[in-house]
Length: 142
Image (cartoon, rainbow, N blue to C red; front, side, top):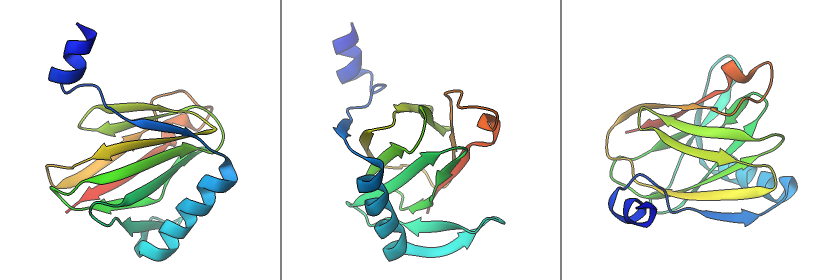
């Protein structure tokens, strides 16, 4: 049944995972943010970064934040890259119930095509310490 549900159930993601290092991933993510930031939000001035349809977008998980905030277009496909800088984190995209464990040392790549406009919350669903309840991020779909 697991093979059937993977193909027909559309519940399980087919993602890619690559061995990486903090330095390599951080350089890619920071270049992406520097090249594509459209504004900042929150009192911490977190960058809001517009992804290029068909392109790569980068998210960093670290105590206790998802960085940066992404802005994507409805109906367009993106390769979302995820990396943890410190501990195991969970990438839970709500309200879609998309869940991925993000482990240090590995770059996780997920193809994503948002089909509804709105604001999506990224919640860490793996306990990562005392500030775990504050580890939230955002994706805007226009």
